[in-house]
Image (cartoon, rainbow, N blue to C red):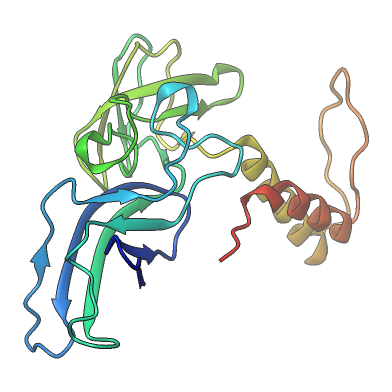
Length: 238
């Protein structure tokens, strides 16, 4: 936590990255018990480095950009109580929305029921993003894979219903993954899983031969290295 000399602007570096929405910011004197929290009015904070939304939505792009700090309006964070004299509490959303269906999503339906609505709905006044559209994601269902754009969510977090910008093209069963994670992150997860399987004693995996197939990493160590390389753009430096 720092306070800029001259402007009085507060800056708090958060733990998770990238920050996509700031829901609330509260401050309290460290010496006060029980805590007397003062919640800042909406709009008295901002994301220091907002993500560039994917296709005009509030989903972070796959470029691994964005920040993890929040800027707080002058006057709320200061040195009046001395060092460690103030506590700041921030509620925020970070990362890429990720969920799965909890009920069958029928073709031509404009809503889906999921196990977690976090990050899918439009950010509204809680974000520095200029978009009023929610997140864009992919329904990973084999040959029936399709892309969706969320326009509303029934809950801020936890189970609920997502309203879609256009109707589903295919029918999807409960348990199907719906994710906005970059393809490289999902692929890296598969590589690490395969590496663990080999480490635990599996010696081979049989897969169907496909046109354009090319041989890739075969050993556990090679798979881990390949996965780490794919995740490198998403490493943060504090």
